[in-house]
Length: 448
Ligand SMILES: Nc1nc2c(c(=O)[nH]1)N[C@H]1C(S)=C(S)[C@@H](COP(=O)(O)O)O[C@H]1N2
Ligand SMILES: [Mo]
Image 1 (cartoon, rainbow, N blue to C red):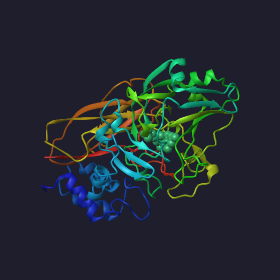
Image 2: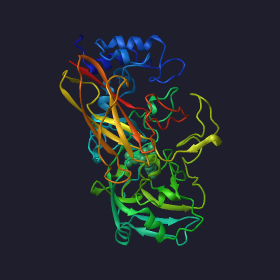
Image 3: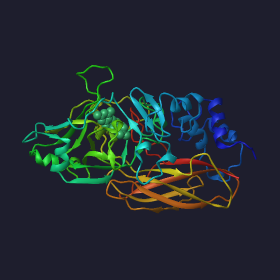
Image 4: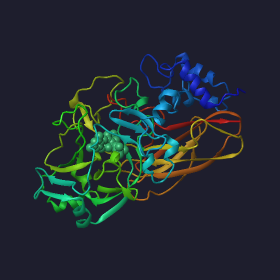
């Protein structure tokens, strides 16, 4: 057997074919069944036995090569330097930088093992430039809009004293998480798996604040305005202003949060005040909130229309041009899971038990079961699944597994929600902006 480890293999694959590994001319996804010679040569490059090879779907690429191509490992010296050098993000640890203007960084799967995501590991997704010199003492929140009976302005102190506080763990995933896997490519940050987290937020219930300002019968949508500024520098332009239908806003888990993981909200995450609506695309959870609008119509702020945070109402063939009128707004996110241990590329010894652990979440719903497979989906093993800390918190799964033969294995995890919807193995529903990829997470394991 070859002496090369998986990390080394991943590097070799990048060097050999930086842009071609897994990408075929027809624009199919890497995970789809390729008939080209690429898949075969990628398996050959593993240079080790594949004990479950007889179950591998024809044309499937080993995740070891796939991870390399999607950048799941920090493969280049340049990238490594970006993380430790001047571009490192203050207070954050081990995040992978996708863009520095606006700042976007994702969390490697193995750093999401905690039930409550520590702030230092929480992904960052900015559309514009965060406000500077924010002073919580003078911050104010204005609640108004067509369907607001008595517009009011609150200081943070008033929000704290006038309303009961709630502390909840809320899963938040960027609508574009997993975008890097779509073919043809979708423009935007090339997130792999790390634009998700589930920290603990404390704040006033959005519903309580709305009720204190009078919600009229005409209320349809609740939207935020943030204090961040547009990348162009134009003070008349907002980077983003989105929201949720009134029903979601009134749920008891929707918060106006003034604390994160027991401390203050960090500037990058929307200090001093942030709207949090768990289970929906992260973009509905407004940061640096200065205004809440109770609208009598669907909100029409920046990034509500066009292709932003919208998918085709009916599925389309990859690469199709879709008219804006045929797009619908993304609401609850789909069921998904992430293997947080082992880390892809781990080496283990045969016949010894290895713990497999991870997180699972399902938008507005609950996760009913998570199964794992080490034989390319031929057989599945049920894991132990925790209850969510509260509604809209993610759930932890865990099981033990032993690999009988030396060689290359993949661990696949597949979650199912309480509506019996399951994660697909291959990238689902191509859409112009690459949202909602909830394909199963795969990690590579080398057994010696
Ligand atoms: N004001 C404002 N709110 C915002 C954004 C933003 O750019 N500006 N980004 C949104 C998007 S797209 C996501 S995914 C989440 C990211 O939250 P985080 O950076 O705290 O992880 O915030 C949302 N709220
Ligand atoms: Mo997002």
